Every structure is written in structure tokens, then in C-alpha cells.
Length: 511
Image (cartoon, rainbow, N blue to C red; front, side, top):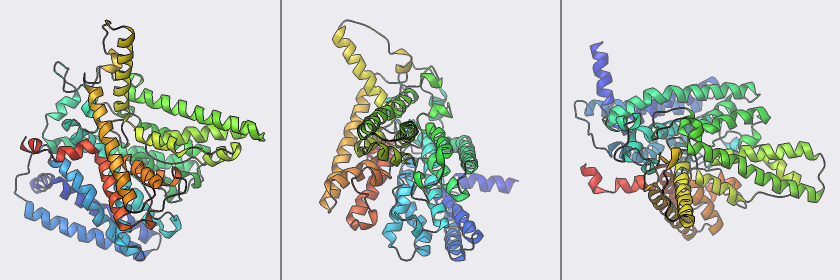
């Protein structure tokens, strides 16, 4: 028992990046087992050998590192996250290239970066080119990336006031201590360990539940598992080319719709990052704004299609109207959560009215994004709420210049200068989008496609390259320089600009 306790203690003292490398090595045994189970020994051996080599390297480095004191820098875990998204996909791509020798390594690397950052932009847009084990590996990598960001949001980003927490009122003087502020005082490694113990069982249980429900709705087991992991991680990865070709029907899409709602607010499944005095979900501004968008945008799209169908005198208006409404509702929720799935009724609504949906709407939904401390990307709904509150306050002062009022229940979650910080983030996002768009355009990508790729990468909503552009963008056809820019943009979108700036701030490294 003492030896086991010593090994466990020494393992937990290893650098975070090394631990992640070991976890990835062990996780390769899953597609290896799947390959052998479906009688694909070449794929099984590729993942098995890569996983075993990774474990050997992990053990050797761990033994060499044993006995050393772990650094307690506040930015150490953040640097480990950055290195994980940049360097771990190199190792993840090794069995991918071994199984698919007809592709270049850079294509496999982009695929892994896209999956691990939960962007979900498919490099191999033809699903039949990849075997089932590779599809499982893509979804598994996306699932692990979502879990990593979920844990990092609580244990790494929140104590540094990053990832949307910079606009909250957690650190203002006079605020009551919460579970969040108490966790911020704990040593970083202990915060991560506590978050893993709390969040991993919940994340796993929700994924398994969704998998079972999707199979119950008639979806094939592997497709159900891939889509369940994709919805929970908001990666939008599919082994069939999208949810619209999975054969889920209304029942399966309803299941995915319900689980996508977890990306609108952290309060849908946890209360350990509450920063206000009222923790009820009905009082959460993120969830209320998210529901307003999910309810309002589909109604506008439905009215547009209804008028188009009336103009062309479509037949069976009621049946087609229901399909159009549900298709818009599901797709809006999907892109708002930065998942990027499209309903199988989405195309039916366009055929019904003869009108297409502007890709700018999908890009706007993806940019807004989901809630703070969720697996969703984008700007985050809490920052949108901060700007909304500031706009309402300014308009009230224009009408009543001498009025004095409080922040209200919802406003107590925000700092007094939360809107200013949110506006800074918006400006950094706009600058990043402009730089990435110009960089892509300078290496031969058309301006429209460059803009779509910039939004897709910064919002971690990869399916935008297929649905928002006039013609689907094929990443395989891009020049190596464009692929490198897109990879860097995906990492930037996942960690956000403020986190990258924090890594470059010398004063924080001295803290």
C-alpha cells in the first residue's frame, strides 16, 4: 500500500504536459482494441504499437523526473495547455499516418489539431476514405479535448481570470467568498486533481447516456458513439459526413438538441463556479440569452421560408412547415453551441421555400458561442451579456441622467468594469480575425473563404467551412502555408487571445 501511495504521489507530481502525453498513449488502446474487434489488424497494430511506444517514453521520462519538486507557477498549467494543443497532435497523428499512408503528415496533423481543439474541421471530407477505427479516434480525440478544456476552465483559466471569468465579480472587494474563490487559493495541481474527480465522472456519464439514447432512436452503435462524444465536446465530428446523414430522425436529433443545451451555461450541470448570489438556472443570464437566441433566430428563419413557400405555392405546407421549423431550431442550437451539426430537415426547409440560408447567420451564431466554463468556443454568452447590460445602462442614463439604480440580480455576476473588459476582448477578436483573414488571403485563399476559415477557427466551429461558404472549402486543396495558418488560428481560438497574451506577460511569470 505504501509503494502504491508513493507511486501515485510521484505520478501526480509530474508535469501536466507529461501526464497528458501518458493519457493520450493509454487512450490509443481504445481504437487498437476496436481495430482488432472489427478484424482490421493493421489498424489495431498501428494504434497498439504507437500507444506502447508512448507509454515507454512516458515511463522513462517519469523515472528521470522522479524526486524533483514540481513548479507552482500560476502560468505553468496554462503553458502546458498551449504545448498540449501544439505538440500532442504530432504524436496523435503517428498512427493516423500509419493506417492511411496515402496522405501527408501535415494533413493528419491538421486533423488532430482540429479534433483536439474541438474545432471539428474535417480534412478528409469524404468519410469513406477513413476506416471506422480512425473515425472513432477522431471523435475520441475531440472528446478528450473537450474534457481537457472543461477541466482547464475551472482549474486553470478561472483562477487567472481568463476564458470569460475576467468579466465576473469574483475578485471585486467586498464580494462574499464562493466555492470558486476558495478553489483559486488552492495549489494549481490540487485544483486540477479536484476538478478531474468532480467533472470526469459526470462527463463520462452524460456521454454514455446520450450514446444509449441515440442507439435507442435507431442510430448505428458506432455512429451514435461518435455523435455522442462530438455533442458533449461540441466538436461536430461525424463519421457519416454530418448529423443530417446519420439517419437519426427527429428522435435522435431531439436527444442531441437536449444535450447541446449543456453548452449554454455551466449551471446546467454544475454550481462550482457560481460568482453571483443567485444560483438558479432561471436567473442565469447566459442561459436566458441562449434560450432567447435559440427561440428567436429560428422564428425569423421560419418566417422567411414560410413567405418563400407561400410565394411558390408549395404543397403540404403543414408537414414541410414543421420540418422547416425543427431544422432551423436544431441547427441554430448546434451552431450557437459551436458544435456545427446540421439537421436533416435543414435542406428540406430550403427545398420547401426555394430559399437558402445566408452563411453569415451561422457564422454570427458560432462567434457568439456558448457559456463560460463549458466545452463551447466563441465569444461566450457572458461577455455578450456584459455588453448588453452596459448598453441598457447607457440608454437609461440618456433618458434619466440623474437616476441611481442597482445592478440587479443578474448584474451582480459582473464586475463594475466588466463591459470594458468584454469590449477589449471583442476588439482583440476582431483584430485576430482580420490578421488571420489577411494572412490566408495572402497565401492564395479567396477573401470569402479566408473570412469563413478565420471565423471557423476562432470560434472552434469547423463545420462552418462546409455550410457557411458559397462552395464547401476543401482543406486538402490548400497550400501548406494556409494549412499552417489555419492550425495556428485553431489553437488561438481554443485558448483565446487573452490567454496567449498572458503567456507573454513577464510580470505574471514572476508571480
